[in-house]
Amino acid sequence: MKVSVFTSVLLALLTLVSCNSEPTLQKYFVENTEKKDFIAVDVSSSILNLEQIKLSAEQKEAINSFDKMNILAFKANGTNQAEYDAERKKLTAILKNPKYQELMKFGSGKDGASISYVGSDENISEFVVFANRKENGFAVVRVLGKNMNPNNIMTLMSVLQKSKIDMKQLEPLQQLIK
Image (cartoon, rainbow, N blue to C red; front, top):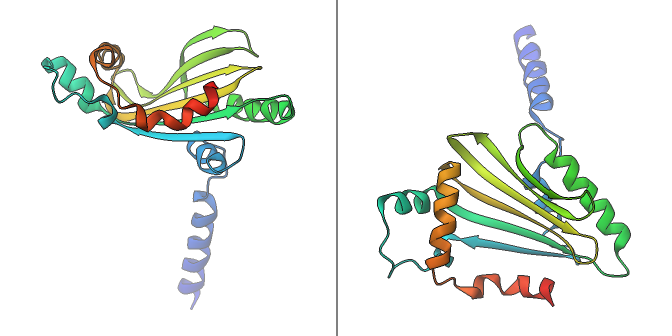
């Protein structure tokens, strides 16, 4: 009987300890995808339409390291500036977590962009681009993959210039630009 009670208490404690209430970027995406001021788009690697392009071994490696992109954008307008400020602060706080290692930062605090990554220099699982402008809103882009590294990202950018991007996957973002 004592062993059963001890085991039950131990399992309950482990369950409570394993529940992480800390905000994460993934949770933020899930919580805000359906909200009215947000636009969410998931983009797969098929958007690149690379079937007809001859790729080098390095380019193939870069493409194979890329899985998908998640984009979440908040469209600011004259009536939702308080929400914009609150949501921007939430994202900034999430990205201050040491797991997100900042590579670059552009602009000032209220208007600007940053690029961060998750993982080690040679084994990156996620790149995060966060750009904000008070008049337009903000966008956060998660580039997810396996064994990505900075060279893969630079190579991927050069391949993007040659690709014939399938714009249908990006149609929801056109609302943000209008």
